[in-house]
Image (cartoon, rainbow, N blue to C red; front, top):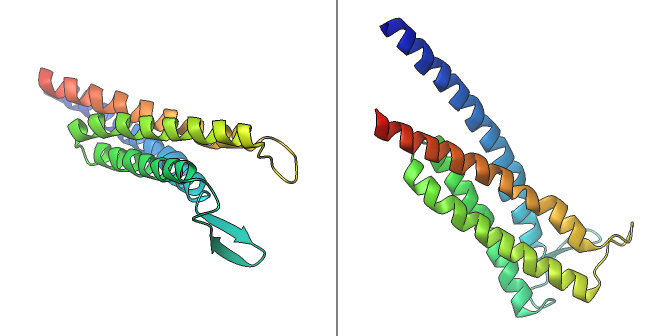
Length: 159
């Protein structure tokens, strides 16, 4: 009976490790990279051969929501790292805070982009749809992080 129990624990451990790998890959792609790049777009611009800081190009409201988008991505990234490091309570608390900040910033930036008529200079597609396609998938690592952390928290209480 003991061998069977250790087999299932090992199998659970392998599945958990696989889910954590998926979580980290999605976290690197969406909350960290996409939020960081989209949020920093409110401050940095590529001009011909180098980066130029454009702090005052946008309104203070848009700059604020760019900062919130960056902060939300960093909070979600830290929640995912804490989940991998088995700090599930902090992970369950930080992940909803990060995704809420990211989605609120995404909403306000996308709304402003539509109102201002921002579009891609090559395809003439609205920039808001680009923001949505790049930043809305932060929901996936959020769901994985919260479900995995919650599952681990409740399974620890039962043992």
